[in-house]
Picture 1 (spheres, rainbow over the protein chains, first blue to last red):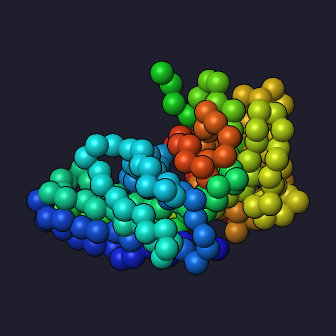
Picture 2 (cartoon, chains in turn cyan, purple; picture 1 turned 30 degrees about the vertical axis):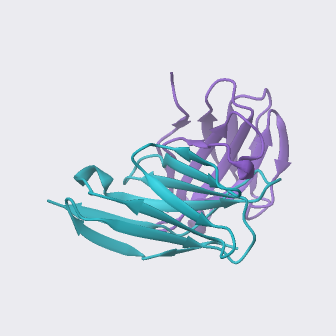
Length: 110
Length: 117
């Protein structure tokens, strides 16, 4: 089943913070976060694994609540370049594919 | 190094035509994925290859969709007798390892935007 992302859209001014959430009804092993700009490939941001391991860009922070099967992506001191659609993809431990949410549109204004 | 490339970037087809979409993964990547992305939606899994073996095709919407990766590198997604509901962006992704669910990154291509008239 597709994970649920919230909010669907958010508008920020430069320098403001935002939190994007991803929630699943199924037990997860990993949560993958991507950002996609219009007409471009999704770009990897971060992976969070069951057990606490994280892999990703230093300037991005996120959390994974294993009990609630929820992940949150924290965007601080937002820049214009942060604009785009953010997707979470969820993975099972012995699974190959990712199941993606519908996305959160983020727009940062100057 | 080069990333994942896809061609063509845009394809317009008349309903009923066959189309072939190409994906060049990152060299050496074992896993290759095809996703379909409808407007305003996240990527939806279609099929998965481990080298040349198609291990999961559970996401292919109908038997009009066919994918191959004969030499374990380049892959082609073929859609026969295209319908209007096939209009979408088709994304290809590759990964160095198996089991993306265990936390291995997938690298995406820019996609092919298919419009069926």
